[in-house]
Length: 113
Length: 117
Image (cartoon, rainbow over all chains, first blue to last red; front, side, top):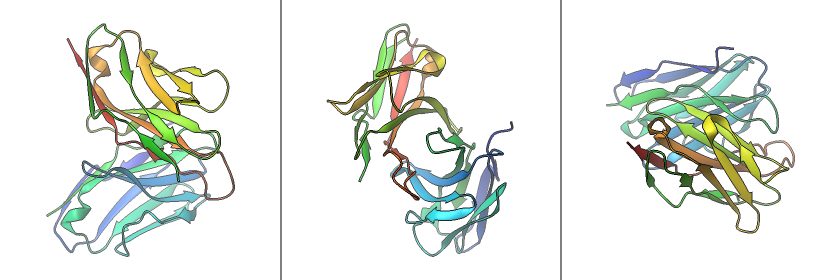
């Protein structure tokens, strides 16, 4: 299996622009998670899905952030408009079942100027 | 609410010496505990987990962790450190399943391990 695939690996954009991050989970995994990692705040859970349905989005920082999972093999995290404080590494992770471990993608490093 | 504490931001150890990375947790019920490792510019990789059974759990790359319920700890250990073990280590905890929406892992802040040649 190819693992969790994220794109782009690096994104540099200007404040106010729309940013879309993409994730392909491991085939057969029912759970998909979006995390954000910064030096100041560590690893934060933004939102997670079970069978393509958003279960908990309480970690999404504000209305500028949105996430979708239109099918079992694809999810997006969108920031519109982006701000410099959104600069971080965004990770997607997936899991097969209740007790299983998370498998992380390589991350998308976002820099908002 | 569940939480994880990794009291040391950084741990330095000489190559060949034993290493310990500390983790304590707080959760309702019997915990699901995990250790992950992150190398520079990479995603987190699973090392080991404790769900039930033997308190000493063995994982990847020669790492092991000991679950101590009375001390609410889950320290990561390795008998002989390698320079290649230098990385960021994360402890994580989750409460047992209690219904839809209860699968959130809470991560610690991470501990940077430096193994000195």
